[in-house]
Image (cartoon, rainbow, N blue to C red; front, side):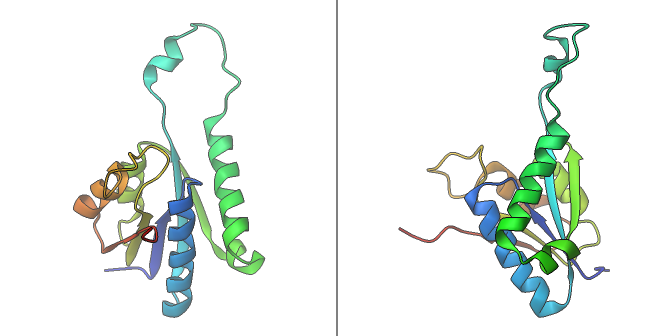
Length: 144
């Protein structure tokens, strides 16, 4: 059973900002809560590039900043304060499928930063439409 929660994937790209705006409007209509999910992932080989040297790069901190900036840009301060923010160190598609367990709806943009412009859907939106445990809305860009 759905728990009255809408999950939206956010990566800071224009399509994800449109998805966030759509999801917030839908949550306002339905009374569902809103959970914004961002993920970060990098190949494990990075850890062996310079053995014994601590990298100063903090991907979780960067992801949190991207998510906070997106919420502040799209939502009112009151709406942003009510959003559950989830930062996951995992593949984006899997992070969204996992977060959507028990949700009433999963919302994603048609492509994020890693998508090919010519593709109808990006790899993440394509994956979640096939594997999400709840209904999925893919917010498309406006036609040229």
